[in-house]
Length: 334
Image 1 (cartoon, rainbow, N blue to C red):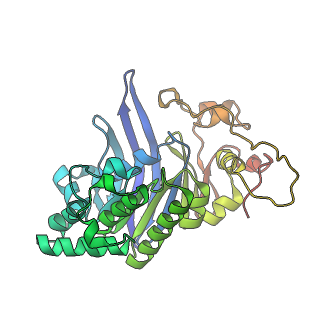
Image 2: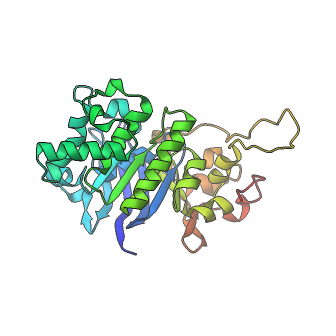
Image 3: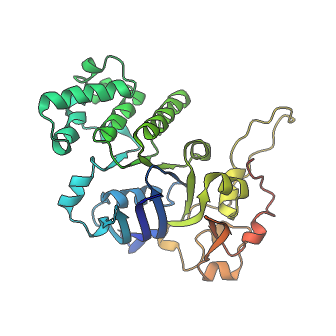
């Protein structure tokens, strides 16, 4: 398979009131044409910041280092004009909250037509026709009438479908979906995720799906990257990672998942939790970022960054104690 996106030693540095901090630290991954990758982790793990670095949309004052090569071109070395030519065209992103991502001052039809006018060379009439077709494709009823709607006139699920239509307008090579079902009810979440999967399959796009929901990741992607403290804790084929759970953090995430277990006595015991809280980025030292919360941590974990240990071909875990992680009493997923 052709490597479409190659990320090597990606770092993102953010200015704070006290000092510069690294929100992403030495991230590596490849994405093949048509492949699907899930990035999972708690809030503050660096998932969204990594995605914004790929799109060249980091907040003011933030800087990115390393290499992000898309179709052989280093995006971190590209100027804003070049990035504008790629964003919304060959690279597209669905943001977490469509009510803030959509412009409240412009009608839905105008916002969907904009990338078609900028990148596809369509005239206003053609772009409007294409916008109506896109709304119909993502399941918006009466699509031509909805072209005249304002964002506040649509429900949360409909606004997210509009965001998906905008992202798909120019047939991108890579679609990045950052928590695309945030604030939606469970039924609408399932509809949106099913829609994204179907459209990705139909178009042959590569997908980067960012989520804190392990169930969503398990059902939606082929490979997974588990992030903690800006680093990759574990990565590999989703079935192998979720069956093996080689890193204590990955096992902790799974242990905290609620499960339906018919026949178990009531009341059920409380769910296990990962001790402590996600550390402040400014407090991360040279060792393993998870050391302060890990039941296996020793002096070396606090002092030295663990290497990526190969568990099986393509499956790695950055931990000094991968041989002991399976003894933590946390159940793997079958």
